Length: 174
Image (tube, rainbow, N blue to C red; front, side):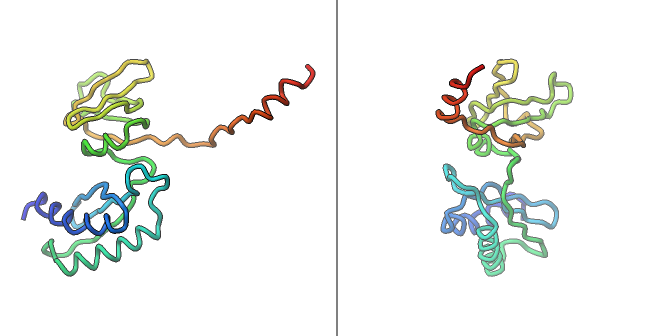
């Protein structure tokens, strides 16, 4: 059985379970003897997925995989979230993350530059468009990407300035 067929069979099992839990199947991959299912909150959700949701999804998916037995032999099931810095492998991943900061490494070692960092401003089924720090927009063919992920800005958020604080500051004598 080919890996693509296994992934398709797993997707057919996992998809309805995730949908019932109001979750999104972000990715399914097989690496050696491990099946990794990455779940996330539904697109547009205000909150991310939490550990209780992952635990429940793991139990339901494991039970259904045991019953349907879509993969011959032994394997380890891993159900996880995509995390703050998400791997981008498919056009759907890029489309979902438009508006976020990303880093991309191109497959071609002679590409200059090989690594691109910027804001993902557009994505379709074939390309991703980045706005680089220089202000240049760069369109990249998704098939030419070796690795890509979102970049989370670590550190404290700026405190919002209130109107009262601004007014107080302006009225203080110099």
